[in-house]
Each structure stands twice: as structure tokens, then as C-alpha cells.
Image (cartoon, rainbow, N blue to C red):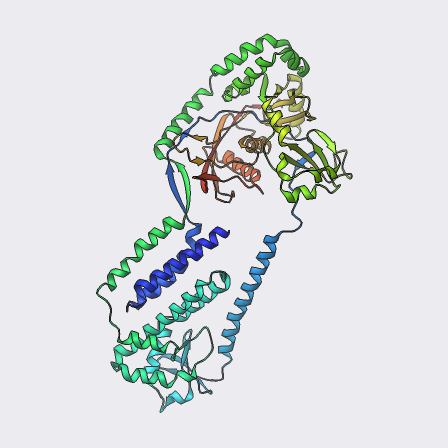
Length: 620
């Protein structure tokens, strides 16, 4: 937000500087009026605009994966709210100042409306004759002047003509516009200078009209001097006797330079250059590369109908342990399958396509601790005994955390204790913390996670339970049990139910754009995949058969926020569900923004999603 404010101030300052340098001394008054308005609007809007920059990168083809949910069923991940947020205080203070300035605008309008006098029509214009001896001024569609100016049912022509131009050209709209901007964006001090330039220009327009009709500049100037002492202190009005008299007199006698018209056209490249300078750049892959990616996607679709070479190598190893797989014996698998073969199986599994994952009887993957560092504020809160602290797999007292800094930790998980949890009422939250040294050791050890496909009996039971919910059609689901072979982690085995197999691959970037580091989801892309598949509601696709695909696209901006989130694919219903779970996965989440040359940049991300459905009719 601070960056955006600085961009607005800097952009508006440059445009105002160009105005005073090239246009303020020229008699291009009509153009100057719209330049000032356009400059204000442009400087306010351009920091929010996006320019997509083509970045040629190499993309690694997406791979299929089967999702494993690691959190206990009794808990759900939440992030405790901050008890004191300075941002909210600053926002409230900002709104109070804006409110005061808006009230000031209203007070000025009321002050004008309360002036005493009578209304008349003069040359089809609304005239308000004041009882006070005040200088003429105009506001909205009414001209205000003292009774002394209305003699013999006439008004001095120069006075009337001057104020009529203000009314006719609706100069009050410009003033109200800039006053509202002052109230809302008061943090930009340059808006006060814009208003001064606008009011000056309005006076030049009115003066030019009077002089073109009367041709007597000297008499008109004398009239202005006579009325200087009668000015009103009302910020919304156009006074006949505006106080910048010297500048007006100079402009009356001034002539345009021979480059006056050329200077107007310079505004176009100026706005274009500032658009490039201040708009937010989003880095995306080159069109040629995207065409290549589409070919890869098409190839991947075809490959999903046949088994990969990795699957065949995987099966060769598994065939030696068929009885263990049939018995779904985790203990025997971890003990009797040699460590080097377990690692080979995990490496092969990473290369599986969708058909491989659907048909394999055992899932062998690496168990890793994802990186998510707690904040200092969070660490201070965890000292409260309402938090149950698990540190490196062991339950510890809260006060132990006083010996640590937030940067001492590699990962944090915050869990909400719900009524079905045995610890409900004793604790409000469970906090799982891993130190840097422990996580480094754990991840480097290449710990293996094993998952077996559900047995026919389990599927039959699951199907029987679903019969009471969906009377006609259901989905052939996969039941997977997860267990880590690394005994130092006190992880809980979890059973998850999911409709078919989820496929997802991130936009992996390397090679040509060596100075471009892609955006990163907290905990890594696997954490995002995990959340997407966890929340996916497969039951609503009861009539669906086959592999359904969609691609999520979004932009990670410089602040790590998500925008322009959308899902594209042939199945609209699937697109909507994918979009829903993607939004949920990014709620209250801040990405690590992409960087180019070490500076944060906006980055466009693609995340293909696919699910294999097998639908069948039930026995009536």
C-alpha cells in the first residue's frame, strides 16, 4: 500500500511539473483544463493497472500427484487473530481526517446557501442578488452579486460575462471534484497545488471570454482592481475578483508561443511513458512458449491413458512384496523393503501420470516438513497456556518458548481444538513447532510415507454409507491410509476419502530467466495442492465419467496477495468447484512474491487440475 501511495504522489508530481513547464504559460486554456483533470485521474489509477511482460522461460511438464492430508481429523487449521493491529488504527485515523474534510465541503455549501438575498432571472441565467456588498462570484448554475451591481435592471456586462463563463462551462464541477479528491486522498499534498492550477485556469478562461467580447483590456483590469477588497473566503466558489491578479493581468497581455500546439501533443507520450513506469508489471511466459506448453498438455493427456516407464519400474520392485501390499502391513513394508528400494519407489512415484496413480496399489512418497516461520507476535502469544505446544515432536511447557526467537523455527502449524477432540476445553489451540536443526535433519533423511489403496471391503462399506445420501449415482472413490516410517515424529495416521485422483502441476520456471525467482506459496506448492484436493467436493459430480481438467490462473502481486483468480476448462461445473477450493486455499494467505533482479514483481501463475471419475448406477 505504501508503494502505491508513493507512486500516486510521484506520478501526480511529474504531471504537474510538466504542466507548469510546458502549458501553464500558454493560452491553451481549454486543453489545460482537461489536462489537469486527466493528470489527477491518471495518477490515481495507473498504479493499479497491470502491464503483462512477456518473459521467455522453460517450463517443466506438469506431473500427476495423489494428495495426502496430514492434519488430524479432530482439528482444523486456523490462524489466531492479532490482538492489536496498528494498520486498523492508522486506517481509522485516515478515515477521521477524510471525514472532517468532507464535512468541511458540506459546511462551505451550506454557507453559500445561507447567504441572504433574492433570486431573479437575467438573460436566462439564475442570479442571486445579495443584501451584502460582496464581490461577484458563481457557484454551480447561479451567479451571486450585490444589489449594487443591479442598476436600472442591468448588470455591468464584463461582470456578468465573466461569471456566466464559469456557470456555462461548469467550472464548479472541477472544483467539487478536486475538493472530494482532497478529502479522500489528503495524504497526497500535490492535490492542493492541482486545485490552485485549476482555479487559475478557470479565471484565464473567463478573462479570455470577456476580453474577446469587449476588446478593452485596460478597463477590465481597472474593474478587477476596484473589487479586490470584496473577496469571499469560500473555497468552492469562483470569484470575479480572484486574488492572483498579477498573473491574470500578465496572461491577458500574453501571446501563445509558436510551439503551443506542439506542446499539447507532448502530453500523449508523457502519459504513455508514465504508464509504463508506474503500472504494475506481470511477468508471463512468451506466446511461443505457451504454444509449446499446450502441446505438452495435449501429450500429457494422451500419456494418462497408458502407464509410464516409471510405473513399470515401480511395479517391478513392488511385485517382490505383493503379500505385504495385499495385507497392507505398514510395519513389514518399512522393515522388509530395503531403504534404497523405498527411495527408488518414491522417486518413481514422483514421475507417475494420472493412470499410474489411479491403478497403483501402494503410494510411496517423501514426508517433508514444510517451511512456514512463525512471527514474533505469534511466538509471544504461544506462551499463553491456552496453546498446547508440541516442539520437535514432544509436548513442552509454554514458557520454554521464551528461550527461542521466531527465526529459530523452520515450521509452525496452528490447530483449532474442536469439540470432538479429547483436549477440548483444556486448550483452545494446538501448536506444532519444528526447529531449524530438527527440520533440516528430518527433510535430509528422505523419510518415506506409505499409503495403501482401500480394500474391497472398505470400498463396499463406504459405498453402503453413500447409498443413504445419493440414491441413484455415486463416484468410485479411493480410500488411502497414510503413515510415515520416520518414528521420531509423533504423527497420527489419517484416513482420507477423495473422489478419484487429483492432478496438479505448478508453473516451474528455470533457465533463460535466471534472474526471475517465481512466487512461492507458504509451505511450498505441495501445501497448495494439498489444500485444493482436501476441500474438493467430489460428491456433486455423481453423473460424471472420465478425466476432467481445468486450469487455475492467477496473479501473485508484489505484496504476496492473490488477484485475477479464474478457472478455465471444458466442464463449467468442474471449473466452478476448482475456483471455489482455490479461493479457500488462498484465504488469509500471503505468498512469497516473485523477484526479478532482487526486486519484488507481480507474477502470473498457472495450476492445472484434473480428476478421474468413475460413475456407476446402484441397484434399485
